[in-house]
Amino acid sequence: MTAELIAKFEKQFPAGPSIRVSLRCPANPSSLTVLFGPSGSGKTTTLRCLAGLEWPELGRISFGDETWFDRERDIFLRPQQRRIGYLFQEDALFPHLNVVHNIAYGLRSVGRAERQQRVREIIELLGLGGLEHRHPKQISGGERQRVALARTLVCHPRLLLLDEPLSALDIPLREQLRRELRRSLAQLGIPAVLVTHDRVEALSLADYMVVFDEGRIRQSGPIEEVFSKPTDLTVARIVGVDTVERARIVAVSDGLATVQIGSAQLAASAPAGINGEVYVCIHAGDVILDKGAPVSQNSARNRLTGRVESLVREGSMVRVSLDCGFSLKALVTNQACQELVLRQGEQVTALLKAPAIHLVPRG
Amino acid sequence: MDFEAIWLSLRLAFFTTLILLVIGLPLAYWLAETRWRLKFLLEAAVALPIILPPTVLGFYILVAIGPQSPFGQGYEAIVGRQLPFSFEGLLLASVIYSFPFAVRPFVAAFSGIERRLIEASWCLGVSQFRTFFRVVCPVSWPGILTGLVLAFAHTLGEFGVVLMVGGNIPGVTRTISIAIYDDVEALNYAKAANTSLLLLGVSFLALSVAYFRPLKGGAI
Image (cartoon, rainbow over all chains, first blue to last red; front, side):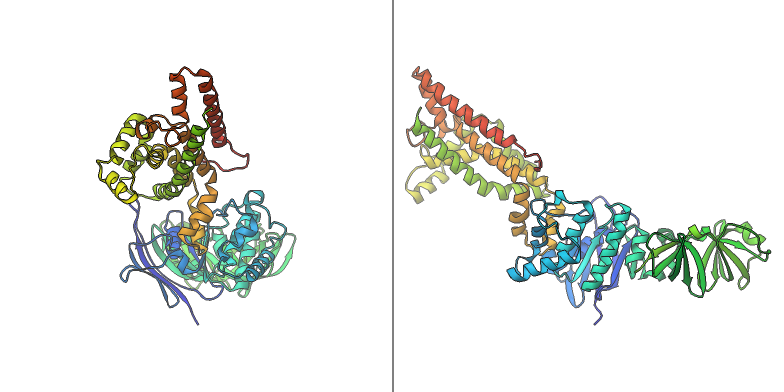
């Protein structure tokens, strides 16, 4: 069965901009949609409308074959009736309850034995053992957010809504929690919608991506497609990376990873502990093009031979798409383009420094 | 000391506080949550007893509950007694008189609650009504306690309103402060001093409770 989350609504703010959303994303077990965009673009408001915490002025929201909101038919399901999980930007743990009571908070209607069983299981899944009787003030930020996740997951929500849940944490902790989040969602098979403005977070968690700007959706689709084929310049600027490709790490040594990408191999600087499936991200501005010259000495670790697929002018710059066994974008000046006499179908060499290749883990 | 008056004052303060707890909490929560444009008028009305002279307040209450008023007549028809110069009349006046002392700390406590705690509870499937008792009240208990203690202490020491509405009937409406006044009028200073000291002690204790914050505790 293919479940879908369909939302088409308009939400007005008294003194602010309006938010007009038309969204259709998969809600299969463990599918994750990311709502991406700059601050103030309407992502969080959209998420709150999906949760039932805000009611739009117009429109419809449905999940699978259930209607959650329909202004015309006067259907307004409260958050309680939607059976969702919501994770706030900062943890919203109840300060007067300890960890166990926080986790069991939503399980009132469940029998005592089953409640204890479920709380035990989720504590184990998220590695919260030993903290059961602590109060929120007595545990760290990462632990608090993990308790908040446990409290939500233990209720078996049909859809998990996450509002930048990791943004308040420092970077190493954020990466660790991201891994745990991915693992728990996959294990429990809960579809999720995540709000973020963090590119790495989007890439490492999401399958499907919706790009927001100024209260409107600019593009939506499978994440690789949105990153590698932005429909317009605004989206390209928002997503901010030009080449995003799935790849595999074949070897790591001395902090340098060898990555198999399409039919090509790249050397990239490897973040600690990286392995297996990754996304390779390259900014077009970091790619140097070279043509016909004999092999010279330079510091770039990667020399790729490719064919020019297309040239698109962007002001004083030209965006060059290359086929080097995978699709690589380069941004060069008009002048450089003329000096190199770049034309469609012609062969060029692309030079890439290892630190310019960013690897985002997927496994 | 006039133990009859002390006992009466304690009973009056207890029931006043109880009634304020029951009607004050929901009203305060509504005041803290509503975005109604004319809310300020209601807030002003709630705060009125703080600055209105007790005699003025007492006068209006007396007229409102008197046998000439529809309310007074209605009460008499149902209960068979008049409200003025009775314990029930005094209780009603005390509730109005101490209203802001309970409701304002309640509102402050409720307004200070982080909105996302309430929303988190809703998203966990817990109704608005249950959220009020399971999250809102426990989290704001220091403010609720402050309101109750202030209302209790304030009722214990009331004078002007009691005199206007209740008069001076021993065992029915003769409260501590009236007894002190009577003692002073009768030049019985020693007795007045004892009772005054008791009231001073109780008031100081009550305010200490209201201002006490455990080190880790929440603020209002």
